[in-house]
Length: 218
Image (cartoon, rainbow, N blue to C red; front, side, top):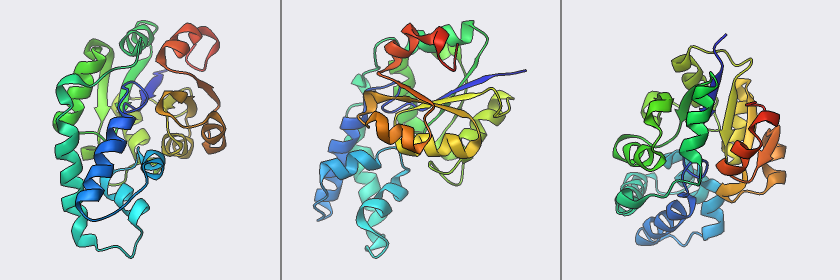
């Protein structure tokens, strides 16, 4: 039976959450909105328009949405040539592939951003497929990104594992019926990840790799 190891990317394999926080904060500021960075941090992991709706509310001027999203994309794009992967992120994916897992990415990133992230992780030979924001109608916390990843892997939810760093990841994985593993390197507390569905949490990819045999990916 095919076993899928599905991974979120931002905050899970790449140390980019705080870059997103800063660039979203600036995009909102340019549009005349004062949004606290801690609130943005908690919203990272949602798709762009869902993040805007979550932070500005349903009564916002929705005609600003595209401009805010475009500003964030432009600002974040200035970091594409130096996005940092977490220690052992690529090694973790390669080890899992070598152990018989089918490794798939499930991320809200797409296009040039996704390409930059994959360059940073440097494990393309271990990645079977990617379910990006371009492939699904609803992003996390809806289960569609995880289900799409499973479909690409040719795997069922039973026996598959989703690794992520946000409550949106844990909710999406739980709704898709997979075992969820949380990583704390994205900045979300262990208790919040557990409440959202994480079966177990580790500090970062290196910590998960060091304890792989005793984890759901063992």
